Every structure is written in structure tokens, then in C-alpha cells.
Length: 353
Image (cartoon, rainbow, N blue to C red):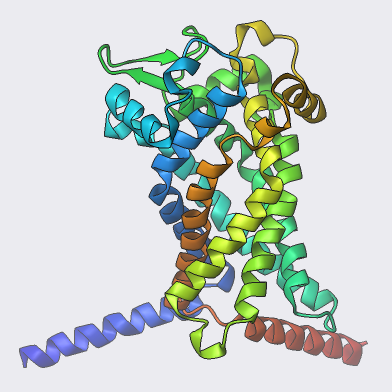
């Protein structure tokens, strides 16, 4: 009797879950899948992200106060330096802002990519379903996600440029000890009070210039590589990780100089000597080339490779896994359904008129 009651409860619970699953719109499922994928990927590579930002900054900029602490010690030396001065938690300095930014960013990015792809197919039913469609959809989706979440990216960067003096256990600014941020809200509030909305979007120009090609190329290479994989192997995790790794590698290499420009623009306001002399994207690019040489546009790229390879690979893999777990229909099924419904709607309108 008890077993039958328990079995009845289990079946009832499964029925409720199945009902929720069936009634949840595909867009919501894609948002959830994208958010989880972004959060998992970002947390997995947080230590490399922190080292990359510090390493890139100290080698690119002319600040001497702490440049000597990191210059010349290399990748592993940078890890040791952070552990010695900040402890293990130092690797996750600014990661709260990173995750707070990447979850909505990734959710919007993946969902917008799927949505734009469907809209393009709906508007042009005869369009080729190849990687070029993914290039266009991914590019527009990347720009949409950046515009919606950029202030959090700016906050994450500024927080990452602060270090903890382990002996005193208090914040000291990398460039100016007078400019200290105590968390995401405090940082965003101070930026807004000082520079308004414009301050929260400082550096968004190169972000957009970079994200359009990067996001599009990332989806392009991922889908292009998958198209050459035998159908029976496409769902293998190793295959997805490999395709995602190469996609991120190519996409990031092509657009990396704009990432360097963006970071320098974001932290430019931290320098007391730079007040009132804000530079645009092209001016900053020229300044870097003139003062440090073109090689500095690729400063930290090797570290970025170590971060991008697992990050993009994990992101795509987790996203596909989440879609499968949430039972999101295949893209072609959704596209065909949308085209069919659109056709029925037009036919109904014509009949009524």
C-alpha cells in the first residue's frame, strides 16, 4: 500500500515536471541554458582570467609602481605572486562581477543568436542554412548582449585591477590609492556619480567593434567544424569541446587587439594624470602602437589562449547539454514549425479578407 502511494506521488511529480517542461517557452529554456553555460565556463577559467588581466595591463601600460612586481616573472610566477599577496581567493577577485555579468550576457547571447537565426530563416525561407547564417546571427546577437550588459563588464574590469595587501587585509588601488571600490554596487555608484551613464559605457566602442566579428566567427567556426563531423559523433562531449576550442581560438586571435584597446580605455580614468584627456578607440590604438609598438596589441595573448580554449569549449558544451536536458527541440524543427505557422497565419488572413 505504501509502495503504491509512493509510486503514485512519483508519477504525479513527473507529470507536474513534464507539464512545466512542455509549457515553458523555448526562449526561456534557451535563456536558462545560456546563463548556466556562461556561469560554469567563466568560473572554471576565473584564475586564468585574473592573471591575464593583470599581466596584460602591467606589460601594456607604463605604470611603474607595481609593474615591477609582475614584469618578467611569467605565467607561473604571476600565479605565485597572487597566492603570496592575496591568497587563493585572489584568483577570484572581481569574479563575482564577472559571473553577475556573464550569466545575463551569455543568456542573452545564446538566446538572441537562436532568435535572430529563426527570424532570418522566417524572413528568407530559401536562405542557405550554412555557417554564414551562424556568422550573421552570432554577430548581431553579440552586439545585442554587449549593449545590455556592458556596465557590469566595466565594473568587473575595475575590480580586477585592485589588489589586497595581505599584511593589512585592505584594498589599495593599483594606480591611485584614493580610488577604491568596495564591491559591485559601490563601484557602479561611484562611476555613475562621477561620469553618469557615459562613464558606465566607457570603452563600449571597441567592445562592439570586437564582439561583432568575434561572436560571429565563434559561432561560424563552431558550426563549420561540426558540419564536418560524422552525424553519429556530433553529440560526443570530446567532439564538442574540440570544436568549441578551435572556434574560440580563431575568433579571439583575429579580434584580440581590440580587447587590449578596450581594457586600456576602461582603466584610463583610474590614472590621475589622465583626467580630462579621455581618448577614443582609434586614438588609443595609435597611442599603444606609437608608445609600445604593435606587438603590445597582442600582449597577454598566450595567456588568453589558455583561457579562451577551455572557456568557449565548456560554454558550447554546457549549452548543448542544457538544451538537451531541457528538451529544447532541434533548430530545424523550430524553424520549420515557425515557417509553417507563419504560412497558416497568412493563409487565414487571406481567406478572411
